[in-house]
Length: 568
Image 1 (cartoon, one colour):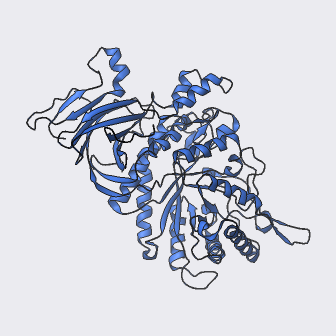
Image 2: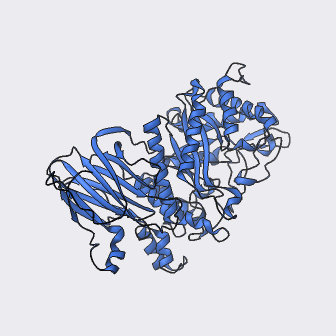
Image 3: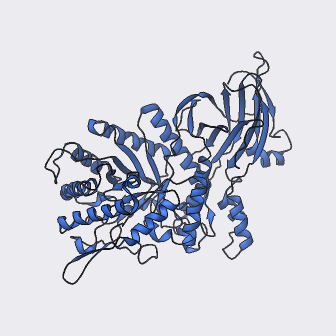
C-alpha cells in the first residue's frame, strides 16, 4: 500500500467495552500527504492489501449468479411467500433465470399434491391429450417478473414411462432412470409442447430461454447410459425442430464420469435420430453441493468449502477442453447449495443452522468472486450459478427451520437472500483487483457504474462457521480518480448487521404471531447504510482501510461529492 497518513474513524483506542462494541465497524481512511511519511500500524491484526484502478476494466458484470429454483417451484410461486419473493427479486434485480423439475410429469412434493406440470394424459382408447395451460400460465408469471425460464423437459408422464418414479435415493436424487416406452409419442409430446411455447410467447422471446433435457440422470445404470444419449438426441430434434435458434443443453448431473460420457456422445457419438456424428448443444449443466448425503448427520462433518467448488469447476473445464467442438458452449452450474437435501431441517440436523446464518451469505459472496476470478485468470466462464432454494419455509409459516431457501416465514429474507441483494448493487462494469489471491479467507471485488465505484470486501473462513477467529484489516487503494471530495457509503452483513437470523435469536426466537418482532426482522433485511464517510483525494488516490469481522461482508459505494446518490 506504500506510505501514507490515516485518520482513525473507528474509536478503537477507547475503553475496552467500546472496543468490543465497535471493532467490526472500525474504519481508517488513508490519504497520502507526504511520500516520505511512513504510517504506523495501530493493530497487530493481519492486513490484506488490494489496489483498484477504475480504468482497468475486465468485462461486463453479467450477474451470472442471479438465478434460483426448487423442485416445488410451480406451486410455491402461487403462495403469498412466493409472490413476496418474486416481487422482491424483481425490485432488487436478483433473479434472471428460474428452473425446476417435473415440467411434463405429475408430482406430489413438499406438501403440494400437484407440483408437476401434468401436461399429458390418455383416454380409455389410448388417445393422447395435451394440457399445456398450467405451464403456460406459470411461465407467464416468470416473465411478468422479468425472469426467464430454464425449461426442463422432464420427467416422463406415467403413461409414457417404462418405470414409474419411486421417490428419492441418497444425495436427494430422484430415481430418474425411466426412459420412454414409446419413443415416438415422447418426441411428439416434446415437439408439441415446444411449439405451443413458440406460439404462446413468440419465437424471439423463447430464443432467450434455455431448454434442458433432464435432471440428474446420474442414477441410470451404466448399461442404460446409451438410452439417455438417445433421450438427448430425441430432445434436441424435438426442440430444434421448432426453431434452430432455441437453446438446448444438459445433462444436469453431479458425477464427472457421467458428464464425460455425455461429452463423448455429443461430440463424437452417433446421433440416434440423424445417424450422423455428434449432437447439437448450446450449454452444459452441472450441479455442486458443499456437503451432502449422510454427512449431514455424521460427525466429524466434512465441511463445505468454496475451494472444492472451484476445484470441481476447473476439473470440468479441463474435461471440456478435450472436446474442441464444445469450446463455445456455455457452462451452467444450475444447482448449487452450501448443503444438499433442501428440505431437511436444523432441528434434526443442527449443522443446517448454517443455512440460516451469515455463513451461507458469506459462502455465496466468496463463491461468486472465485468463479469470476476463474473466468478472468483461466478463461473459463460460468454463465449461470443457480441457487437451489426459494421460499419453502415462508409457505409453511416456519421461521429459520434450516431448509435451503432465500426467505423464511413472515416474508423475511434470510442472510443469503440479503447477500444476493447486496451483490446486485455492484455496477455493470467489473474492475481489475490486484493483491492477495482469491480463494483464501479474504477477498475484494470491484465494479463501476455511472454513480461511482463499488468495492465489496469479505472475510470468509469456512472452517470457522461461528466467526470465532479475529477480524482482519482490508486495505484498498483506488487510483486514477478525480482530485475531489468523495462520499463512501458502507453496508455490512455480519453477525450484527443486516442479519435477520441473529436478530431473531436476539429477540428470543419469536413466532409469526409476534407481529412487532416480524416487522423488526423485516427491517433488519433492508440494506440501509451503516456508515457514511467523507474523504478527499488531493492526488487522485484514495486509501481505505476496513476492519472486517469473521464471516463478514462490506460493500463500499464511492461517489463524488454532489453526484447522484445510490438508492440505499
